[in-house]
Image (cartoon, rainbow, N blue to C red; front, side):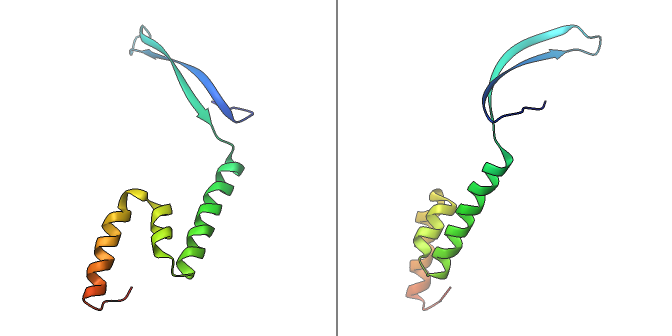
Length: 87
């Protein structure tokens, strides 16, 4: 499939068996992303994270990378600090 513009689309999917008989048809919603916009988004997150790491703001950097691991990271860092281990 090729799309000229980005945005939400509805796509009909038809599944057939080896003989060409239709098994089922469904309508799915998809989101088409512009590659340049996606690149700029990823680059801005990377540049921001890199800036926080350079500034030693590790909590913010980890939160941006994955909010799900923030608490685990803090536990590891606190344990390392108690043992005088530096990252």
